[in-house]
Length: 170
Image (cartoon, rainbow, N blue to C red; front, top):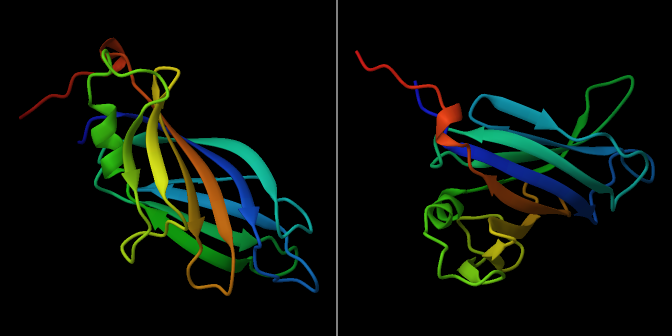
């Protein structure tokens, strides 16, 4: 069994220019997956630029796994329609968490990630220290859809060592 390394707080801020899946609009919600975990935001009715500002917390055991994000249009009488998907790596973010911050002033940028074919970033994303916590703001460009971006904010929550149950090795 893997051991819990910490918690990743993902604030799903908003969607921008999401795809139309109903007559003139959509009823979007976001699903986040990490390993076997699956969390979702509330549905926002008839809105292509929804503001969720909702916090979802994932347990991180393996930082090499990508966080997968899917956007759906909620439908009452049929299956929900896909409105695009994206994924992002938390490896650089996790590496930043392990740095000793004693000599780093609050607000400092620890690392910058640039958009590339290997990620879904729509623009440069900075990993920074804010109020003693490692944070990252990101805009993800949705794939497999005609348009749309999702704005997220990541924050790491350390788990005090005493709260972690000891792992038994055979």
